[in-house]
Image (cartoon, rainbow, N blue to C red):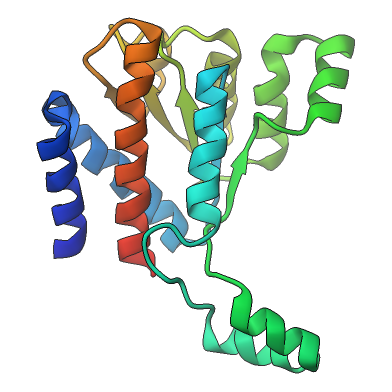
Length: 212
């Protein structure tokens, strides 16, 4: 881990002292994500309600620039420019990003699957189609007992993907399946969610620092 990434983590803990108990867990989650992205793998995200919004938030921070400018590779820029003026414009305006998919979208699929099969497998169905060995699933559940996230974690493990869990309370059932658990020291849903935000902002900033 670079000095800049260590500084990001340290500053997060200073600003949010309650997260000192999960500092090592944040680093372990970073290591899992860094390894996956460095090897050309993907990140998938699942959660419900506010946690679904957090999934979309994380995806937004990783698909484009977050804190710093992310350049495209010189080779990709050159290939874009081969397409003339429009390609040149793309080469100047596109940003570097990381392959992230929030499983909380896709309303046509999710409503059809929930209606035709069962809502509790909506995330697991997508994981079973998308995930490959070496990918990572981040499951966000304030209780750790969200059934659809639990099934998604099982599907991910069966595909050889790692599971990073963001939770609260005692970690619930998902904790037992996760490769890395970040269980913030709160129990009420909104208080757990308030601590999840600085955790994933920290992870996004660290990843950007290392990979761009």
